[in-house]
Image (cartoon, rainbow, N blue to C red; front, top):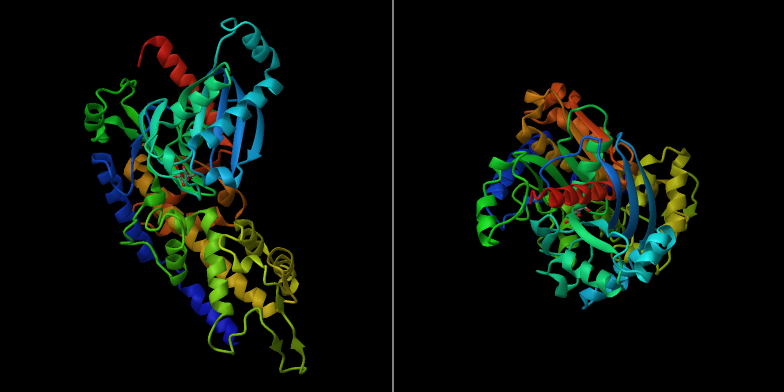
Length: 498
Ligand code: BGC
């Protein structure tokens, strides 16, 4: 009983009320506006130099690479021009040693080598002809999805502002990441031109626009995966800082004729000063012991990389509870039959390791409807090396998981809801279309339902507005999206539009 009561109390610390939601949206709207006006704000609101969304008729073959967090992907994409495409891809995990290192070229040459292997495998003729007779075949245009905050100054030019999601390579900060990649590609003499720099959210927005039938365009692309972020279609005239950036860079090139600019919000850093974000003791210690304290504060409460760690910290607090009655993952005696359950935790359990618990654990526990939470106990045994956990332990974990996951979804609704409200699309077009991708939206049970429940509580959306918001999965959209942007870049260059 004492355990259940304490778990309930802790779960309540994660509650994010209707009032909190509305305060969150208000602050988000203010930070959106501030970010459009000047640089160096929490919400970076980065102009991406992509000034239109596709309509599904685009054609051609392009390469795309994607450095997102956990994996590195290389793909070639053929757009058929009828909302469909074919895609060939290879995927490798990024070795941890390359994520935290002194030398940027180690990471970028790793990427170039993966491109080389891909070309040899999937475009052997093209590759061999180029090697034998340079100049004979054309270069592939490559869209580079680089999902970290980058100060973009052109369609294929951008300086890294900071690393997120566990990466840390000081040397790369402030450098143009396209140039870093192009240099390594050149060293291998590959027929590839890095023609577009793309954030994964922009790719998701483009992919959703290309694949969704109908003439209406998508408003927003959002990722809820290892990290979180969103990019949306803004009126060029609203991006007030554009003139200042132009001046600083001695002129920037982009197509002004559409009157639009896709803006990468970098909402992972929304409210870094914690004006409105919830802040439990577990959030606090997670941040303090992370490699980037004080930044990405929204992301640290919402995205996949962090939810497992929040849970781990809450579980540890419960396990180490000072009251002996709160016996969590410890031996328990039962008053009914005088029996004692002996629970052991291996000292090597991931419960004791920072970042040890994967978000997939939360998804499985949230989903668990089995008798006596058998599945949760199996996960404890298999993934956390906890043997003979009691049903009370599993119940306590489920309460915490549910609270952490639901809070993440309600916070996600703050960001999505604010962008929808700012766009006024519910009033002007009668609906707003959102493309999403990432492990949380794809696998976390009920994530979208919790988001929708929150939408209904947000002033300016409400139950009527919620029905008009379409959310569609743009799976692996970043590859397709990067190809689409490479195409736009190629066409603009050919037409002399930039
Ligand atoms: C990065 C964003 C990215 C997001 C989702 C964040 O950590 O800052 O650029 O879009 O993760 O991958």
